[in-house]
Amino acid sequence: MGGPVATMDAARSFTDAVTVRGGRIAAVGDAAVRARLTPSTEVIDLGGRLLLPGFHDAHVHPVYGGIERLRCDLTECLDAADCLRLIAEFRPDAGWVLGGGWDTGQFPHGTADRAALDAVTGDRPAYLLNRDHHGAWVNSAALRLAGIDRDTPDPPDGRIERDAAGEPAGTLHEGATRLVEQVLPPAGAQEYLAGLLEGQRYLHSCGVTSWHDAIIGPYLGYDDPLETYLSADRQSLLTGKVRGALWWDRARGREQIEELRQRRRRARGRRFRADAVKIMQDGVCESFTAALQLPYLGNHGRGMSFVDPDVLSAVVPELASDGFQLHFHAIGDQAVRDVLDALAAATTGRDLRHQIAHVQVVHPSDVPRFHELGVTATIQPRWAVNDAAMTELTVPHLGHRRAGWQYPFRSLRAAGAVLAAGSDWPVSDADPMRAVHVAVNRREPGTDDAPFVPEQALDLVDALAAYTAGSAWVNHVDGDTGTVEVGKAADLVVLDRDPFSLPPEEIGQCRVDLTMVDGVVVHERKA
Image 1 (cartoon, helix red, strand yellow):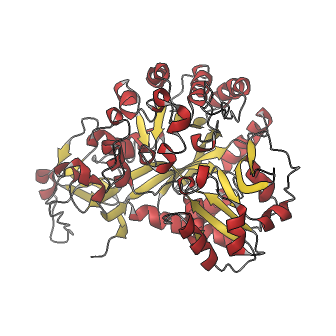
Image 2 (cartoon, rainbow, N blue to C red):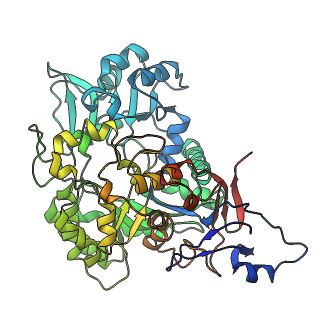
Image 3 (spheres, rainbow, N blue to C red):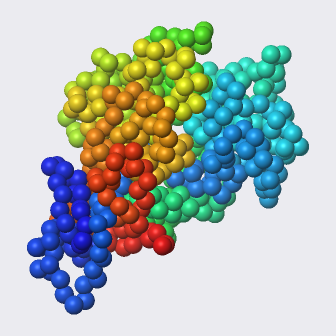
């Protein structure tokens, strides 16, 4: 009571009070709420703050993010020198220096070199994932252990960055990381559980009550987190509500479908289940691995299609007919088109709610196909800004025309597509209000940078709906959460102010005061 309530229902209506009883929403609106008040009722006075449904992160990796926070965490570094300072100070118990979060935009041409890393790590092998999790920074000791030298060929789905003499320079792109993964020290179950719990704590502090873990399988040197989730669920340690996407191994074909069926049957818990399959179709623009219809400028090729389009068109209908929801990573316009083409052949009559995440470069003729095919666009708003990765590593190699096709949020919404939203944390931070700020302003909070393709900005209500009702819908939990309606779970968030009353440039200043799941407070900000 005492503040606005954004219900995020179909009408995007507002009300002014909510009653919670037995973990469910029992009444909405001041009159209905007052009628249920008793002397034992605990009353929370909003004091003008906004109450809204708990945020649902539609694409996130909390186990990875949590583990990286417990290892050598480079996500807050300001530049390359700052990264090297933190690495030098990090003293792991084991011999390896593990962690990540370095920003490609802070290094020349987006690549980090082994000589600088050698200077601060000495003979300790180092393997540090970059922030977008499509590459790794390695030192000479790690390259030696993995047997990588000038004669090592690039794998079909990756690239070893090389210096002028042809020697490995220290950055491994995409599938080239697997060459080092095989010699990494194994992490134990306790580290994975600690990572999940730290990731969960951080997500709750951001107002996230439920999420979709977009990789349930081994990736980039991490083990399969399936057992971690099931263990946490059995021990009643999982306070968030989780859906997961089983990882499609691009080195294999349809023979893995039976294995995915078996894993789906195992992935059933009280707060966790995995009914989707995640297919990563391409890489990222910064390293020229996102798949484009026309070549990058500067003789960098057309990128990489990790799954052959003919194979994609064969396996996608088979997976859909078996009841799997499909969750795709597609960055480049060729990847987006290949996925849409495959989904066009996957009409089953079932309500599977397939989704394409990231949708960075989308050819204008493909925008209306999202609505026509019933495909949700799962957006990562934080990336739609004029940062160094965009201005120095992406736009110059896309060219002006294609650069204007990036992150077409408003066009997708206008064409009738359902929008869901996620952070892809730890690729970017998990704060939904900072992402909402970017979706509305197309610039980073606290900056006066020129807005990035400003005509694709969303209205505030649409941005918030993507992070609540839209994400709940695409993950098949909309019957239980995602809106403030009688009978639904009391998954709620209280912000420290009302963003609808703020100038747009101040939206990103909103902080989460309280997060509630099933009526239980899982985060409360200290004054």
